[in-house]
Length: 507
Image 1 (cartoon, helix red, strand yellow):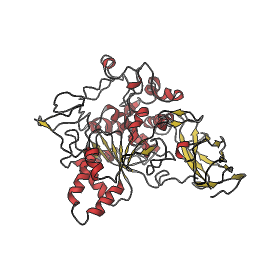
Image 2 (cartoon, helix red, strand yellow):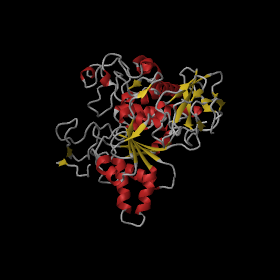
Image 3 (cartoon, helix red, strand yellow):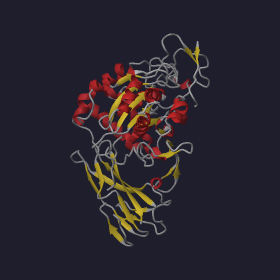
Image 4 (cartoon, rainbow, N blue to C red):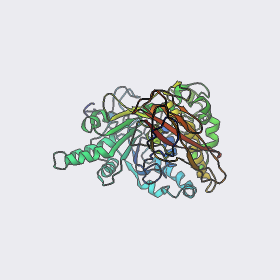
C-alpha cells in the first residue's frame, strides 16, 4: 500500500592623528578551548555525507560530539522492512518504492570506525582530545529512517536528541541536518506531546527554543516547513545550502578538470592533489572522489567511481580523483576552531560562511552569497570560497596526522594585542599589532590584515596596510563599524591559517 504525508505544511580612541592601539578581538569561549561547541550529527550517509564525515571526525578534538544519528531524507530512506510502498511526486523515483538508495544502518560502524580506530593512536599523539573509537561508537543511534519525513514515532535517535535538549547543560545544542530534519522534528514533537498542556510547558518550550540550533545543508524533507517552523518558531535554523557552491557536488561545473575554488585555489580541488594528499592511508582512502573506483552499497545512483557508468550519469565528467562533494561541511565548518568562529552570531563570517536573516522569519537564516574581494570586486560565493584553500590545507595536514604520530604541521596561534573593540573618530589612524606563535619548532608565521567589508556597517573600502594600520574614513558616520581580520599562516608542508578579529566603531 502507499503511504501519504499528512503533516501540517508545511578603547575608545578619540584622536584625529595617529594612535597606537593594543587592542584583541573578543573571542567566544569555544574559540580558544574553554568550552567546545556541543553538537549532534544526523546523516543519511550519501557518498558526500561519507566524505564530509571523514573530514568531520578529524575535527572531533575541537567539538563536543553528543550523537551521530542515521536519518532519512528525500534521497535516502530505508523503508519499514514490511514491503510498504511509499511515493511522493517530484522525487527521483516515478513509482512507489519500498526503499530508496539506502546504504545500510551500520555503514559507519562497519567501515568508518574501523578505519578511524586504525589511525586513532596517531591522532591521539597529536591531540589527546580526540574521542576514542569506542566513544564514537557509543554515540551512534538509529533515527527516523523508514520513509522521507516520517516522524510519527520515537526512535533511539530522536530520544537521544530529546534527552540532550532537556538536560541541564547550558550550552547551545547544534543539531546538524545532513539529510532530512524528521528525526530532529520527532524529538521536538515528543517534547511537545509530553509537556504541552502542563504547567511546565511554557518553561520547557522556552528552554528548548533557546538551546536548539539547527544547522541544515538544505531542507531534504518537509518536516521543517510542516512542523518545526509553525510549532517551534523561535528555534534558530540556518539553511546553509548555498554553501554547496563551494562544498557540494562538483558536477554542474562540467568539463575535464574544471573544478571549483577561486582560480588560484583550484589546485586544492584537483585530482592529483586529492589523490596525493587526501585519499591516502587506511582512513583517507575511504574519502570519495571522481572515478575513484568506490561506491556506496545499496545506492544505485552512486556511479561516480565507475569509469564505465559515471560518464553517462547526471554528473558531468571530471578528471580522475577530482573533488566530487562534501556537501555537508556547511553544517559544521562554523563550529571549527579558527580564531574568528562565532556560531552564536551568524552575521559574522568564517569557514562556515556568513548568514543572513530571511524575510519570512527572523529565526530562519540562509547563507549570504556575493562578497567583495580585496580589490572591491563582487565575487559570487566568496562567502565560503575565500576560506577554501585554508580549509583544504588544514584537512590535508590532519590526514597526515593519521599517518604519522609525531610529524606533520600544527596550526599557529594568532592574536591581536588588546581589546576586542576599538572606538575611533573619522580620520583617525589606528595601529593594530599582532602576537603569533607556532607549536612546530622552526615554523614561521606570516601575517596580513584585511577589511571584512560585509561584517562591518561602514559601506565602503577602508585603508588597511599589511602592517595593521587602519585609517578611519573621513566620511564615516558615528556608530558605523569596521571589521578588520588578522590572518596568520605558517610555512609548514601544508600551510595552516588562523585568524583574529577587531571591530572598530566610529566614535
